[in-house]
Length: 122
Image (tube, rainbow, N blue to C red):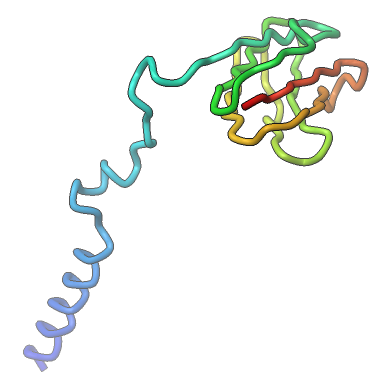
């Protein structure tokens, strides 16, 4: 019986080792990061009752960062379901990289009069 338990333990250890990345568990939990300075970031402020600027034109690959500078909770939600930040409390932010050309309309799910448009060009 001891050999059976030992074999089971060795098998379990081997399975665990194949699931853990080479850098250890910490490597699996770390987010992928782009090298600094290679991606343009455009900022949009979420104020109470409006996005500022409400309309932007960006190059493909640009990151848009929305930051809630208002006193109320807001969202940035694509009208076509491409993204949804969820609720952002004052001071919180949300980022999205735009890899496809096109025009993307969005709104605040809480304050439907808050709308914006992003045009992505080549």
